[in-house]
Length: 161
Image 1 (cartoon, rainbow, N blue to C red):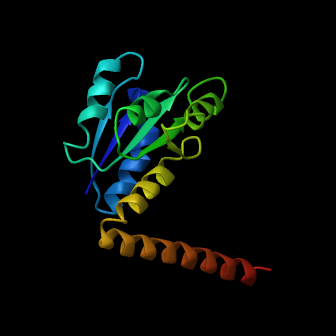
Image 2: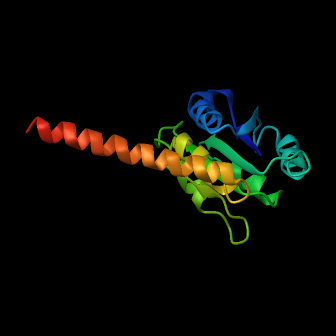
């Protein structure tokens, strides 16, 4: 199982790093690259066109401002693409979010919240879990731990009332 994370700029790495950490926590092999839909369009097109043959099964694409990277990648590959709109402009990432979710018919990009790297990685794990039962089990355990943490927080909260 292999995922790819691409970002439009090195400045996106603090956000992307959280996706890398989440994928690592599930044991998902991944590669991380920097490429731009606008400044390196040939590299982005080549990446999209060759991702499947290189063993990539899901792609996470993070970009800010015009945020076309996820759409450019989705246009060039049959693989699922998850977009992370990055808060990187005076519009607080809303421009990035709208660029990603307003994809034309036939070129879907699953898009998470602005700077939502953890959810992008979790969605990638869920997509991969369709093929890899161990990931499905790990996701069930993850969700059970989340529930336990909330229940423990509630119990602690109730003690203090």
